[in-house]
Image 1 (cartoon, helix red, strand yellow):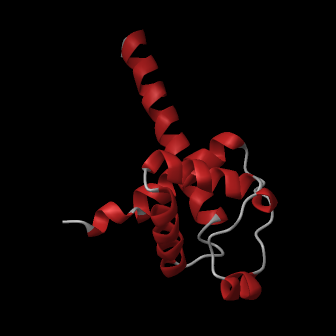
Image 2 (cartoon, rainbow, N blue to C red):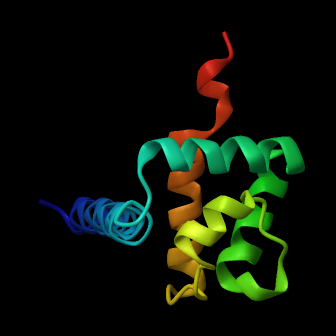
Length: 113
């Protein structure tokens, strides 16, 4: 294999590894506490409040990074049952990628035909 193809293979493998790591970040940090129904409810509430993909992701990031500085969109009984979410321990890149995966899996475009 020539050097150019070898480098291309390394780059592709690196990006695939990153994808697996970030997917695991979503699974291990979001899905360990929230089921699919809850995640759909969150997405519906954020979509109604913020509309666009960009605004939804920005609001989610702000809330997950600084939960005490944002007004949560969840109903009182949900917060009473689960409590307030602690500040995310993910680094910025991991958090943004977890939000990207969450948006991709749960955005409401899947329900529009």
